[in-house]
Image (cartoon, rainbow, N blue to C red; front, top):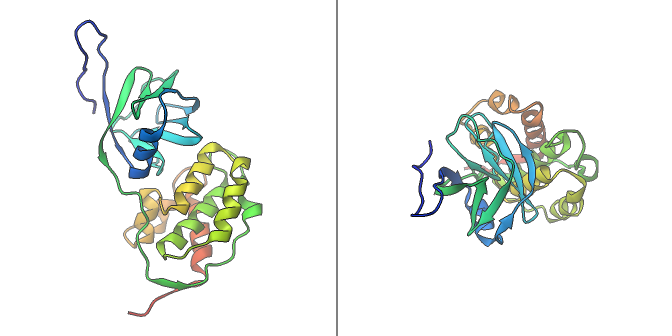
Length: 227
């Protein structure tokens, strides 16, 4: 839904689009300077823009709710030819996206111990095609599991950050999200035992399968802590 049009006497009336936002994304917008922002991708289900070097999405109800996106209740997003940030608020054209609530995008905590299965960052970052190459999806799944288990991976993190410029902006942003334990809701539900794996594997062309592959790789070296 949208909020009613708002405006003042003598000024044009604009329509406000209410959104929900992950807290870290909302903070990033508030910290960003005012001005136009480049469009990275635009479509009827999702729009992505570059805000201060970070990919920020706006998603409708049919798109995957990635942890770097503002979520709307729209079935179809408006056509977008330009975007800007003003006062910490993202605007698509002249329509401001006002954050009405925050959403939790964090992984569930898992009582696991051990050493995650080894992962080859150099072989995976940017490996594949599309907005989120398959290799990056695998890395996101692996990183998210380590955060769920409360295991720090400084060497892997450093290598991922060093290679982030070799993949897409969206993928680099999602890798950063995974390093902060931020994931899509379907992955969080599966990891927490609240949804079957198929719910994740059906996401995107191959993104869901990549997330599951990376998660299982990490889990292969971990075991549940005895109660």
